[in-house]
Image (cartoon, rainbow, N blue to C red; front, side):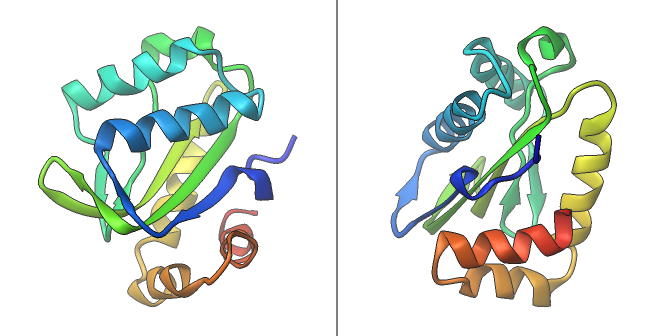
Length: 143
């Protein structure tokens, strides 16, 4: 199963709250068959203990270690909010929901961190006009 498919990439012109963005990421992961409904609660619990804001307008909500049973397969949900999300006072444009089986989440996290570490790459991701274009750029970096 591919970790990211075109159906798991969305672009919104408006903004969202942190909870709305986390809910959408969880819904996408659930629709992809990667997590059970319980995973959303685990994502919120993670946020209460440590913010998943990563810098460079990126947040990566994911469940706590206790949520392993809620993960059925490794997958990503990528949502760009052009109006931004206030993530504990930090401006976020990209919300990347992550579900990783076993140790796979560490590999996925590192690939995303690399992709978003270069400002030029982030600018290209921001400039993508369609979910298909955004998916193409992400696929190059996360393949």
